[in-house]
Image 1 (cartoon, rainbow, N blue to C red):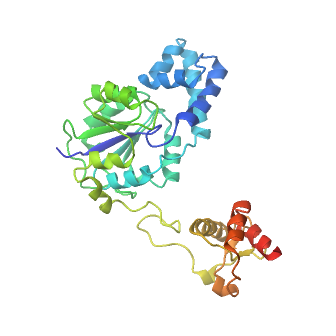
Image 2: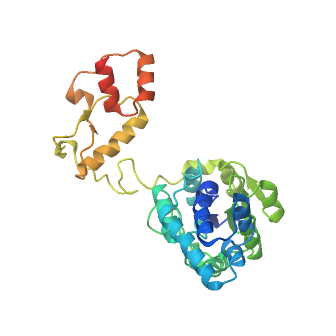
Image 3: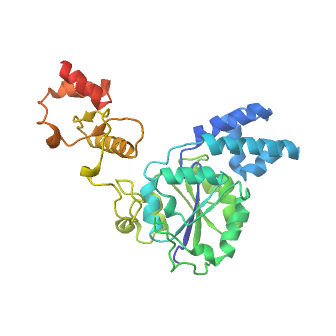
Length: 335
């Protein structure tokens, strides 16, 4: 039976959350004296629906509402965990083959910010957020009941008009890092696959009913797609091109000759590796938009002859001491 939809949990599954979420919740815990005073006690709340478990620690409805609001406000404004390394590629590979969904107790604003910054927001067709519906089982049943949710995206803003077929048992799988999510998925008739890099250990996820637990992100491709790694060859392109233009749209950068560089912008000619070139290109775009004066890259051949060769050991030392190309250039000239 072909897999039609993959539902991804966010925190701990798509992003590294253990420290980032605890640091914020610790502040909520102190503010309301909840008694959830260490990481283990916090992580244990994810053994079931997080907000349902949290409500059990706050029997006063008014206090629980205040606790929930305080924590969600922190998530909305300060939560910025990094994406799990390699998962962006996995998401793009999977998006080209089936509908992708995010299901999270986090806020819709937080989810959008994280996915947009990672360049994968348009790989997901639908998002079910905790500030809209805190009960994940309700959201899963809503997704299963409406065939319209079967419409997917291929890492571009448009929806795939060929989607929307009625789903059957086994055609939807939840990818998650928590025991509570696995249990809720099984209750709703959704398959569950765990990941080993989040809140709960592999043995716990398997005991809760996960059919498998991925140790590395690329395992998800091998398990969830019938032809495994071959799907990567048809993966969606990145959502944003190197110059910042939207996927499928022509480059909007003005021609080089039309760019007016402010007089107080310093030219940088010592850009010696790929990482620095990418960073310098971003500074050039900001300069084009008229933002504060910052150094930009000017092609060497258009400015002056190639710089003299320097001792490799000296260059390596300077790169460690001076991440800034300008400072490194001044240090080289002084030597």
